[in-house]
Length: 395
Image (cartoon, rainbow, N blue to C red; front, side, top):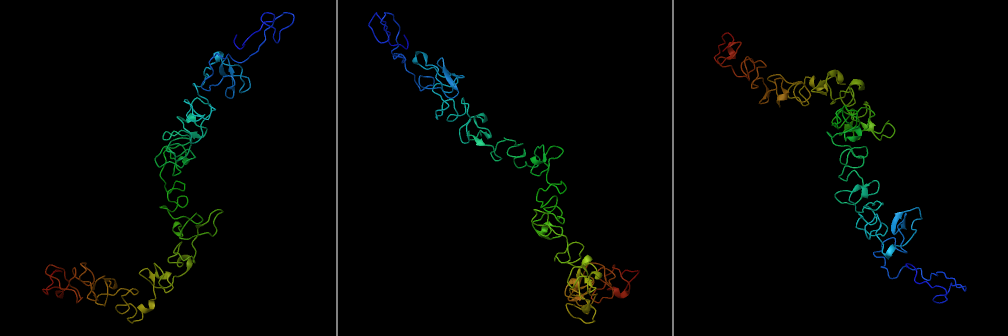
């Protein structure tokens, strides 16, 4: 008589509580505890008397099952007093005991448990981890998807690049949109293109779109970080667009930079004549009316019929006056029209070029510093030759 310790029958054994005085009999339950002789529940398994099922299940026919009964309701005890394991868990396992069971990847999560693991907990695959997390093969612990985890995940096009959320991929990588590329350009062949000065994108070393950093200097109003960025050579915060700290400025005649149509710093072109020592290309660009060797000079010292200043001879030579002709004094080759200064005198001889008054290379002519020509060399008159005889143009 499972669940009943004893039955007393009225009028047969003895009169006890619940018996009627008429001799009728009825069973009286005097003990509703489980059969004390049956094995007790072991292993702390669910579905034992007094041990409710985990949330959302109820004990039905000795097995934890989904039921419409309230969570935790105990609809009966285990037959025979020994609990069979729940149908969805291994023996001894529970997803709410704060212990890592044999079929869980971490405490109460992953594996057979319906709940997923949080960041830092163990995992075997992405499915063990909560949304927005993944299971890195290197650590097997749930981690947040990032652009530096060494794995292609999330929206990435390649490992840790592209997809709109991570930095662009390297030149030559496959792409589907400009944002997939570090250069900002996905070409017609669906490959990330290298930066160029005509791709309409600020990339590479450019300070603004297609300018500076190996491209032409940036135009007026474009973003700049230094003067060298700009075509004008002037970078400041004047007149820049909203949100732009510094931008390239238009050339002016007072910016102390050789720019625009100027021939020198803030002079020439639209800025008027250039002063002494300023750069020039023609006399008309100089206030002095004299441009020599690319610089405006004072012509007075070169036309005063006096050897002065840096002149090496009368009104010639030096760094300001015209070059000296043969037989005039010099201190360097540049002082002479023939570019040959020999022992302090401009000569044409010795330059290994037929020039000046020579009749042949470095010989003959009226220059007393030139040697006389040898037989077979060209001559004009007998005195051009060492033999003092010139015949049909040859010594």
